[in-house]
Length: 351
Image 1 (cartoon, helix red, strand yellow):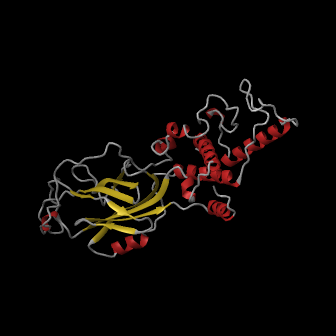
Image 2 (image 1 turned 90 degrees about the horizontal axis):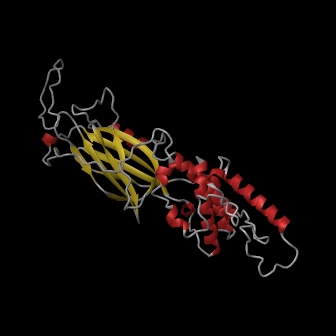
Image 3 (image 1 turned 90 degrees about the vertical axis):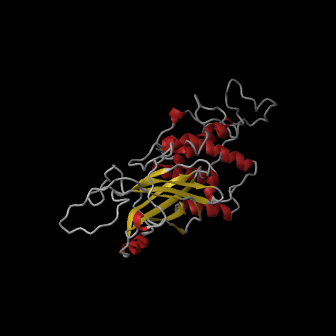
């Protein structure tokens, strides 16, 4: 998994090195990541006492449902990170602004860390960078001439490395970049997978204490959040089991999709469809021994909203039949990365 990101890290490393030389600055540790990462937690519940026949709002719809073309699902296994990162990182755009190109046919003689793709291994990213720097430093120290360089000393002959070529030094900032790249690799490995960590447990318990409310979906996942113009809708569905089987038309009780995007603010846009075989039917009293009467299986209720949000806050999206609780939190950096960033800032070593 790390090997997939090594070419991208080398590119980021040289971009950052060039930016540092030209006075560009990263204001926050988050600026060193490729994408903007968030944890999203969502709870969907139904109101048992609300039926389409006892509401004056005309909740039952019969038109065709429309799915987005780029609908994604939760991953059962670690995803192919090339697929996830495609829309967040454009090599062709960045390569013109930085030194070198990551997919090289052969080593770049002027930049030893830019190696061919097949030369990368699964070794630790930081260890690999340190080895490259150490080898380059030793080679440069042994080859430097004690004589004053001639006017042509900076010109490489037949692709050879000039003897007075400066060696790259693994500064604390470049070391931090390597660590951040490793951290983001682990984020991609766990992206779009249901998480066992939950923060809305008390809210779900409170819903269950209400006789007329019942939670249907409670899920949490991590993802790189795209810009507003490039939503990545994610499929959602209520669990299907004996107590909540598919409807006669083959639908889960609740399904749909949700998109989370970011511009100046976070935006969440759920589209959810509630199905029941008894939609459109008046409630009737039956003896306990009677079989359930067949339903029409026709129609559904829909919630379609787009809501601007603030991270770290609980938000509620309302509908007569179903409600949605959603909370979005920025991904937390490991302590060693926060400490390294604070150390750079305190010593004026941050770019």
